[in-house]
Length: 451
Image 1 (cartoon, rainbow, N blue to C red):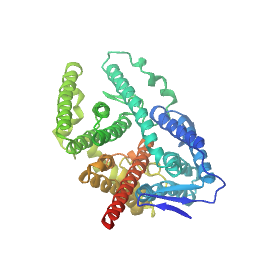
Image 2 (image 1 turned 90 degrees about the horizontal axis):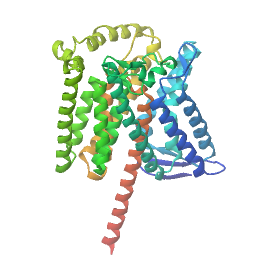
Image 3 (image 1 turned 180 degrees about the vertical axis):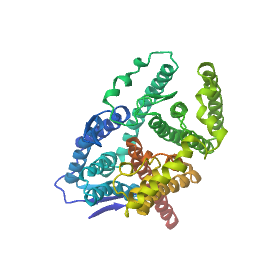
Image 4 (image 1 turned 135 degrees about the horizontal axis):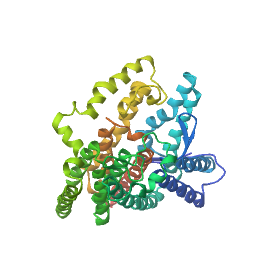
């Protein structure tokens, strides 16, 4: 018999021998948190297995989570289907899992089917948690997630500062711990520091910028929702992480996020945020000018201002050379490459283009549904009641993803996949609570009217 349904969550009773015990659920949540910690610190490292595959420490946590989660589904008497999560992200995740398998069989390159396992390890640990955990577990999980992100944020801020110090010669390059792990890197884009762009504990500065934007979205939305100053301090620390990365896309998205959130603050908090941003910007500019010089630190932005967007060596090469070459080569694939496009085509560094080439319009439509769901949820919260302010987290995420997918693919970041599932799960439950409160108020009003 189906359980009680709401517009956000549907509980389905299954013919299972027993309920999922709280001890097993606690173990599963611990494994998922361990998986998160491993992708925050150990994702670039591992052991090569074949030409394209590798075994990384996070894979061990992901496989353990899959085993426990699928086992929990089999023994649990109830599986929860979060309608917001599956409605917005379901088709996209299905394409991510199925397309590599179909391509491996169709093109008789069975080793490419491993990509499906990689996608399963990216998406399913958190999805299985949403299916097994009761709504009350979401708040506890958020508290643990906040603690992990907080510790990781401060560690990366300190370590990125050390990396910049090494780049300018203030400390030896060999003093950076991640240089000791470089021989174990299986990420082809691994780069401890590129010029003055630090990577923190991640593979490169782009991955650091993704982490910074995740933290900006998470902690800034919490501050808007609850007004706690510690969340503001963490959000501002994340802004510094984004500044260190010098990612122009992250800069633009971060500015829009900060401005959009600023409109939702009360007068006192508006003044506080404005003062922190102005004083922080002045302090950073002074420090940069006194050390490496503003021109050297922000040369990528000066170059863009001098020559324009299309003539910029980075973006211009994409528009004029990389993307046309990839589209031309893709004509040989009637139904798309199915396996991940960069394995069969020239360099594809645009997320939108990658998904179009891999699965043509159906795959791209699934991406648009995911982004559209985040935009709609976020805008409803932005213009809605104060009780729904936590929903601006979806808006912030949509702003960043829409910009970043033009020139990179953050949806293939394990951290971003983890966070998207969490956001849709958490907001789906939040909407369920608001609806239940509204129903109670309506019933009470009817009772009073009848009396």
